[in-house]
Amino acid sequence: MKPLFSLCLLLLLAASARTQYRLDSIIHNTKTARHIHVPGTRLYIIPPPGYKIATNFIGLQHKEHGMINVYDLPGGNFYTNAATFSKDGFAQKGATVFDYQELNINGYPAKFVAAQGALTHKTLALVFGDTTFSTSLIAVYPAENNAAGKELLASLKTIWYDPGQTVDPFETANFTLDTRQSPFRFFKYAANLYIYTVNGADTQADPDGPMVMVTQFPNDNTATPKDIAGMMVGKLRQFGLTNPVTRQEDSTRINNYNAYQVEVTGQMKDKPMMAYCCVVVKGNQAVVLQGISKKDLEQDLQAFKKLSATIQVK
Image 1 (cartoon, rainbow, N blue to C red):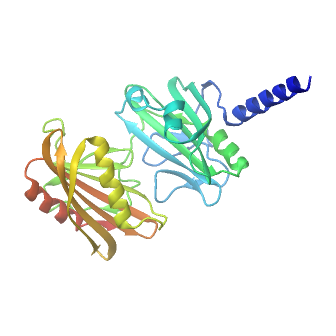
Image 2: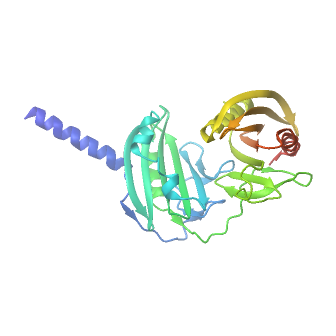
Image 3: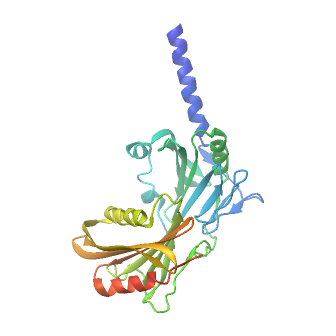
């Protein structure tokens, strides 16, 4: 009987571990007075105790218990954006997956995973949407703080989404650019990514036209501007950059901020291209400006540099 008892005990412990991270298969919420709007998104949520609106990223934060990052993509497609969101996908990245679910939130299909990719932190990730939008919430908390994890899980169960919510993309911007002397104008905003094109034209009209992308994120002072620039240029490989060659790079100062600039040439879809990346750091904030050129490489590079020289961090 002892082996059978041990097996039953293990099964009970495994089931208990799963329910610790589990959401209901169908969640239906209505907005209440306790819900708060996450600036820069269409999402409302009842925050965990002690959490406040984050100041250097989109979401909520607690100094000790953790954070919830929100990435809202109006115009995105849940089915394509979440295609690789799976138990195997997280496991292939080296994470330990505690639970994975496919569920329904307020009528929208959703996916949820509880995982641990680092010794110090655990992650609760939730993505939902339809063919018109895709929204992700990434909650991170100290691995040993199970109470913080339960609070975050309870908060994720309260989310409510308003597809008609008007979003001011610059409400959460920690930077400004002076475009008065630049050919680039603001075109589109998507989940903390600000896209500028020539005269603000739709990129579909000229897919090979130059563009500038600006993003911002917390800087915990463990990564230098050079480190961040290297990471951002590395991500271009995921979007088709081949045979990259660093043409020039240097540490500098922009408007009295520590900064780093790098120019990279290569090919994208067998066409020559140039990528320019400028990272500006102020305290716990990092602003990254990336320019992509596929035609007039040298002319566009000068326009990228001229625009980066106007970066101001709030």
